[in-house]
Length: 223
Ligand SMILES: Cc1cc2nc3c(=O)[nH]c(=O)nc-3n(C[C@H](O)[C@H](O)[C@H](O)COP(=O)(O)O)c2cc1C
Image (cartoon, rainbow, N blue to C red; front, side, top):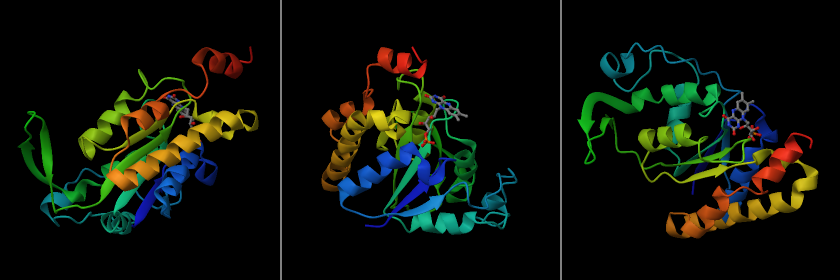
């Protein structure tokens, strides 16, 4: 299975989110290739719509994005691995999202639920998932924006691992709880490989804080 991880953390290899992503792929019994979003040369979308009208499917800008699109389309699974920044994607990932425009067409369609969308330019077999870490202890009132963007951009059943209290994954004293969380991520990977989805039970474990929120806040705040 060809798995591409787009590492959206500005911390690169030191990303706490990436620890969860690695555990997930390990659980799948697979390996992965990486694109480090901080090291690619991808300019912001110009909004010129050349990729829709002038040169359908091809962006007017010549940078690394054409190659990235090729690698996405050639993958069986793309894992967007990114921290939550300001209730959404970090800017380095947002640039990549915008530059996916050549994959869609200008026509506005409406789905069974009455939601408008742009039809894809071609049949895409690549599965997409999100792995994200954040600093607050809650998914609620925090992740809604990023989750919504993923369901609308990619698929309503796009698997998502949103790891709250992710900084604990990088703190040596928190190793026992962090190891427990990474084990859940491995289990999720094994389930995804076997059934194409994460079970509700494992998802609930992945959604829950590793540490009681009151204690987490107290430790972070030095109390
Ligand atoms: C600019 C910035 C914005 C952030 N915004 C949020 C946020 O909206 N919600 C949250 O819970 N954590 C937020 N965080 C914390 C990060 O999501 C958290 O530190 C995460 O674990 C970093 O993951 P990484 O090590 O994979 O980069 C923010 C951090 C930065 C630097």
